[in-house]
Length: 372
Image (cartoon, rainbow, N blue to C red):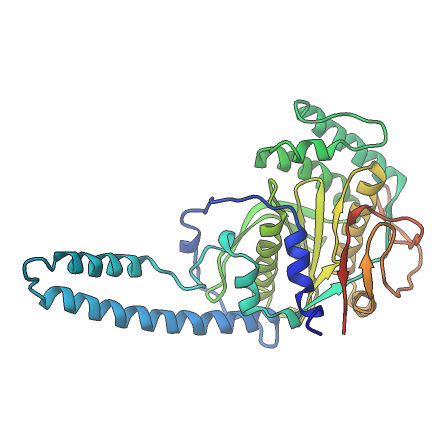
């Protein structure tokens, strides 16, 4: 069981990552009044932990600052004691800048801090069968991504069967470059299955870190059912940010009965998360790579299937239950999952095929997972 206890850390450490010191200034000030997250949900569980840590942090900080100020005001340092006074001032000023975990900007949260409030037992691997887009959607996707790559022609290397997306992300693109790719993918896949998206949507709850989703995905009833986190290169930090965005989204939903989906991508790598009331599922766990057009089609089909199942309360539980039965490594062409579904092309002109083709796989970063 000890080995199984680190599968999430091994997976997240395997994700592409770069060092980054960027912090969204003022993000922690985007707090608004809202109700407490629905009881019995993971959002409520995390919010309770953060609220208690914030209370203890504030109490300790207030007490310590008061003692330091009293010492500095009342003391009359003798000759040669100014170094000690300076140390006290440095300590006081540093303490004034300290923030609780709740006040820490979500963009600088990392996995250890996330696991502090959402322990490993609340995560599970999820197996979703390989899926493929319909031919019409595949053609639209191919054309849109090709046009995006032409706009980034100083990055891309065009090859017949290869997408060339790896050439973009491996040459230190800007976030705007990656957004061009993500836009091309989302506009190709979402409309045909009845979904739309909006950019730069803040999600703020009083007892959760403030987050800002790069994209929020909405169904035909204008209900937000997921987020897409676009990263320039750091998929690892995007995993944590997407987890927090799902929790904030769940907290803002009074019923919180339907699952929520998150996609973390730079336009080439893709990671999928599914949040239910009491569980955070990591698809695979695999970081998929869109090396070929076939890979990209299967990845987008997987994204479409997950989004479609957020509207079907009877289908997703079957997928989730079967997903945690997988054992062993998830590599190329392997999706360790016991799942039965019928082939269906969804949509009139542009659809997503949700049928199972066990002989087709997607290149990914294989991670060994043992589920007890």
